[in-house]
Image 1 (cartoon, rainbow, N blue to C red):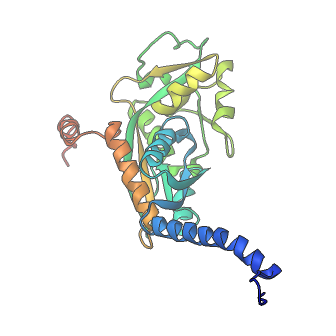
Image 2 (image 1 turned 180 degrees about the horizontal axis):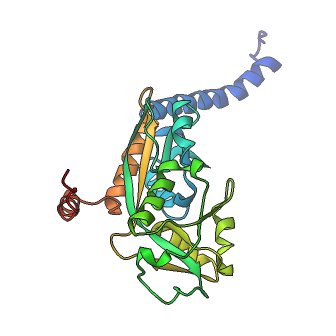
Length: 273
């Protein structure tokens, strides 16, 4: 508004003058977020992980991602291993961490961690004072496991290892069993549980009445994999995978080529045909 003596902003002009700096700042922030997202330095990654990754493996991965790209938000969901590849393929997850996942076209995977299994038993169990134990010492025990359909290859690996040790174990399984609900059954001493060491050792320390026992060689190896979609991978996913690989390397989660070659050389020769 102007007259012969002075210039004055209208009510609308004053409102625009007050709001303009805020609008410009918001625009600059949006442009910066877009730039960071394009470089993989910001964004959201949807992660699905198997329950027994929750104690140690998941925490180490998230810490590595936070250190490398603190502006990336990870939304983590607990799922059983059989669900994860399909969720990645459907675009519901960006990455997954699963035990012995089934191969699926359109989903890529690579080894993330190998670790031994540990036996969890009641403090009152007959084996509680023995460490390590041989796998065949579980011959007359009932294994507390998850239903096979929740992680078929992983379930089969455990049963096959028992059969190789000379026995076929009876199994108690419950639909969709939360790991902590399964652990709550162990102090009664009716069953024993086999779990990856990273989960089992933390669980035994946290749950009174439970003891973790190592298994003598050859034992059972748990094989973790990281999964992601074969196509349309975002910069944020690429950075997440890079952080995960660094995490695996720095924590010695995978055997070195020398160790792998040594294990192969000591493996039994196939029987002649």
